[in-house]
Image 1 (cartoon, rainbow, N blue to C red):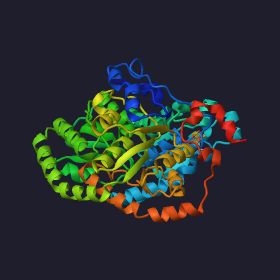
Image 2 (cartoon, protein in one colour):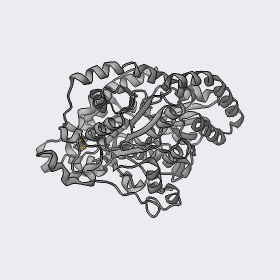
Image 3 (cartoon, rainbow, N blue to C red):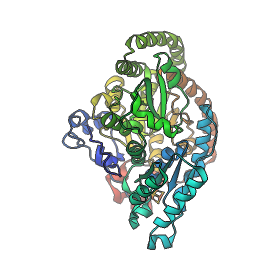
Image 4 (cartoon, helix red, strand yellow):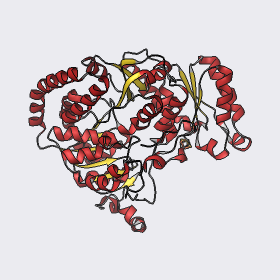
Length: 510
Ligand code: SF4
């Protein structure tokens, strides 16, 4: 397993811990083999077993940074405040996260409120003389204004460059205010993939919020690491007499603190939950479910059985599994009939894509291609039972075009042209217009829990039936809009050609 070091204030980046890559092309089977998960899974980390060679493109069209992921996690904790110690430009996503936060709260029947985020607004003078006085002033202001139970301080490229000693200020104010003031080291340039920002937030929570040596254990409480998705785990867990503790988004500070009292930890996606689940296990003795992710019938069966084993509810789980199989069977058969002959394409974060492809294939939909935004050769537990890509390949077959790309629309365009799917599943909606220009409808998965569990099959089947109805609209649209790419690029067949042969780009600008 990867050793979680809670002594250090900064988390190790994904590439340091897991050997993460953001650019690769090939098929899924090859990626599994090159990742060498089971060989890495003996404490060797990404070393000996991993033969993965990352491709390198000549440019990047756009991305997201770790600091933004800190906004979407630490910034969404109720009763806490996030201070972005950064120039104001880093805070530009506050507005759309506010929208997501409010919708998420409403969908969980929680009191709707605005995010509590502030920015130190570093300017040129601060870059020369340092920004710590502004940080102190901002901490005092937000404490006075909101009386929070915790204050997170997210760093930025600017503070990383000037070397502001954020740790000493957070230590000073933790003592002065009597609440956790938590440094989150998430400078955008620290990591090539934004998911390090998830880990930075979770590291800070593990260090300074989670209750150490809890006096009581809650044997029916399960930590569910998730984002803003609707409450699908709660009703499912009721059948096992279990309660959910949703973390990190929209949790209160006390709900985060009680994670060490829980009987187990699960996650809707290994990409998001890997670090926190392993940290809770290593530092607080809370076991995590070590099974495939809860997507499709067999994945959900195995996942529930492992949860039942950890919480001693095997009998209840078997009863629930049998009744759910019986309940969904007729509807799934009907959906398979209606969806027969369709081809789908998945473009989301890494482990989430593995789960979605599972669901599509259980519904009888062909999936020959996928674009995932990064790839972790291993997860923090290094347990092969969590190797979600290997599980997909071994149980549902290869995915012939499995491209890893940090959300590059030019590659997405080429992939869609090549596969011409009937629809795409997408999580980062900025890519959906690329598909629409090619006449392909997209299902933006705003509610990331929609595909979870047995009901997830039915939900996804119905979503797809709805979106393929929009095909004609998208085809009409495609006849009237152009693409921003030159004919030279739209004629290319290989989305990775620029990585293989960077000089070829000059042919395109002739
Ligand atoms: S932290 Fe760096 S990469 Fe992230 S938004 Fe700010 S300047 Fe950009």
